[in-house]
Image (cartoon, rainbow, N blue to C red; front, side):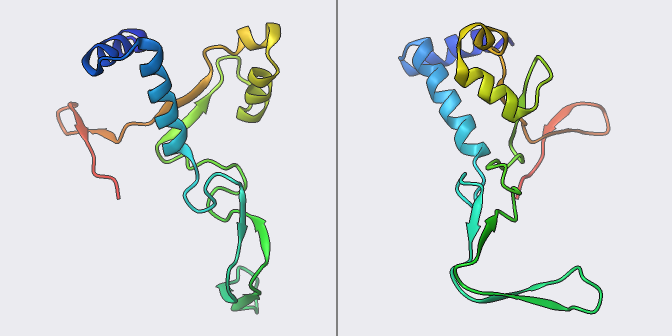
Length: 137
């Protein structure tokens, strides 16, 4: 089904305009793609002293003091949890470059008008090739 048709059907069922339905879907996609560890900031601050396992030979644990900040360990500073959505740029730009172009507006904005977050449904195929919803933790 074409996204435009799906939005029209959803809008009709909810008693809202297609434009409002599109806004609801866009907000939903942004929220499910937001990194849950840093709440979309890209940064992480330890609230208490911790010890983390080290990947350094001869060093078992690394102590980290409360208040230490750095890139989020889950998203790596990208601000996104790409478990449920990912960014698609139809020009082939990186997500960051595409978002900058969309924000800049003008002629560049038209080239990126259809780019954005695309949902990744939790679907798999069974042994017969039929689509099945898979369980997500």
